[in-house]
Amino acid sequence: MTPNVSLSDRLRQALAASASGDTDTALQLFRHAVDEEPESPLPPFLLGAELAQLGRINEAIQAYAAATLLAPTFHMARYQLGLLQFTSGHAALALVSWQPLFLLPATEPLRAFVHGFAALANDQFPEALTHFRAGQAMNTENVPLNGDIQLVIDRIEALKQTAQATREVDTANEDASHVLLSNYRSGPMH
Image (cartoon, rainbow, N blue to C red):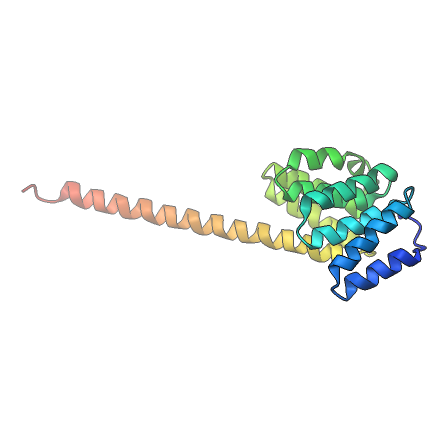
């Protein structure tokens, strides 16, 4: 579900303030919009986005949770809520928040993305990559989301390369130790 895209004047002002870098004004206007439109999930969703950009993660989680409570089928709000929970070290909580997204049709990119994060939480990196890439292929509506997922893919790939390099160093160290021990054992005793 996407909330009604008709924006109030207050939300337009808040978005303009945010775009111009006036975060204090943007936050104030988003909060006023939350108060003025208590039945709409869009003001808390946009407030959550602004707070997340500012690194105020706990407040952003609260705002996304409010949007999700107002509109349980507002899938992007639910996804963002879970994403902040996941990246804050609360993977189990994120998986609970994402439960409805796991039930979306197989053609929905958010379903693939949350399956990717579930695999990632279990250190199933190949499966995570498969889900993330499938979600990217399906996602034609929210291109910035594909960019965010690409960052996750890049981190997984970097971890794989680091792990491979570590295994190679460990193997080389074992070989060197073996050679040293062999030379020590076969060398003359003094």
